[in-house]
Length: 257
Image (cartoon, rainbow, N blue to C red; front, side, top):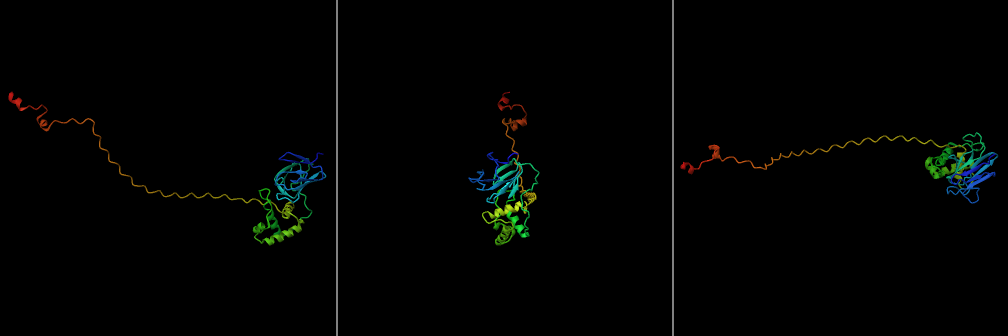
């Protein structure tokens, strides 16, 4: 049977899962070392149980562990699954093929009963992690209080009871471990994204009234006809016109005849 392995997509490095437990993280002494700054020093473990392999997030990271894009605490892996530690993507191979349901997480035999208010608290706690934005931390107590319109002290009391019910041990990142556990148990699910109605088209701005037109300027008078370049021929003097068209005869000439 082929040995299960994990391949780091960024570098192409392959590590066979030979031992029962393979550690993953950014630290110097882990089995699969990832240089991505979003990965914790000791981030997660890959555990072999016979032919099966599952991943468990150690709850020591802000960015969590995802299998095929889903935030998990523990998850049974299938051949070809994409496991993301922080933002470092890896792929699992060599796992025995077997029909597995989509939700075949390793869960506790009995899921503790939560009150309505406790369910509200864990839903608000995990809302950032279940959003489309990847690698975000769960909500803080103050943010949950604002979301649920209660006091921060009341939220902390609910969180203490949830730690006890879900057996979340004291230590660092307790809130992150609680969020991982409730997601793994299926106590919260991603909320459907609200449909944003299309904005109605803005009404067209009313046309501004046309400015009153100024009265048309009176037409310029027709220009006088241009003077002819050739002056008109002068007519005969009035006396000559009265006598006829012939030349005038001087008195001296008349007496000589």
